Amino acid sequence: MHLTKERIASARVAVSTIFFLNGAVFASWYARLPEIQEGLEIGPGALGIALLGAPLGLLLAQPLAGAVVARRGSRPLLAAAPPIMATVVLPALAADTATLLAATAVVGAANGTLDIAMNAQGMALERAGQRHILGSLHAAFSFGALTGAGLAGLAIAAGLPPVAHLAACAAAGAAVAVIASRHLLPAAADARPGAPRLARPSAQLTALGAIAFCALLAEGSVFDWSAIYLASEAGASDALAPAGLAAFSLAMGVGRLASDALAARHGGPRVARASGVVAAAGLALALGLATPAGGVAGFALMGIGLSALFPLSLRAAGQDPERSGPALAAVSTVGYAGFLTGPPAIGLLAEATDLRTALAPVCLLLLLAAALATHLRRPVPAPAVPG
Image (cartoon, rainbow, N blue to C red; front, side, top):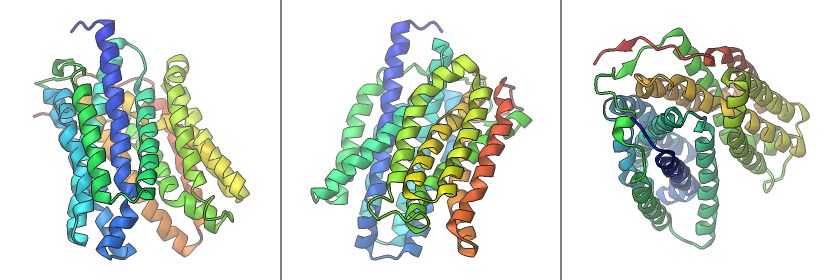
């Protein structure tokens, strides 16, 4: 399929917009969780159970989304972005723990579906334009999440109820997504009607999944534990404790903007290897100094290192156009399994030791990801499940 430069550029703006909206809209409901919890009058244990719905829904939806992308292309799923984004209202409508669990499961499934479709469209654009762009797309997501969190803070300060705020986010996101979806690549750009629905793990695909697992586990550890670590172990004030996550998120967004050019110039394996080492060094700095300034600086360095790892693993998985959707789904699902299981495991280990000790193994996992970086060198088609 021949696509003009103008058509490719237009599609890149469109999918970048959807990445940004996904980050902004789905980050918004997390910011309203304390009020949702308070309104339901449930404790932290019940909230933790209810929140399991989001990652579980995501893990179940992503393989299905990969199968749809393989047969029909990414555009049909991206065209469904407006109703997908509307699901963020559901947690605010929950009446009890059970309905909140169901709501978060739907949100997680919706987010997971959109995640696979976005990355598949990004890979189709990389192939069409013959240039690295996946890192910049993930940067759009990171900056979208920062924007969503910031707007949520303004909404809370203005006294806007969660339902009204989330409905406004969903409506605005849906309206922009409708316009953006008109400029995406056609379904034929990545649809393979005779392609397999699922990819069985080859040695390379398994290694890519391991890299994604380590990267997202490390990311989840920062999201869940950085503020607690700074407050309990590094002596940060309540006002300063969230600065570690803010520095991490900003550094990750900036790092992703640079990751495409670095990968194009130096190759994915070399960049991924350096990324894992830098991320491990950043966390080691935060844990070693155990001061507020050292913690914030360490988490920022960790964000720079982690910025490239997950996009690079997805790029390597999705390079074969015949298996891009299923392979992306396989690697992404394994990665989010790390995001799901890592933070609770850190909590259990911290219960037996302390949080500083519990976070230390994450450094080793990041070094493992660096050691596996050689598997990004050349895409090897995975054996597939016919369908």
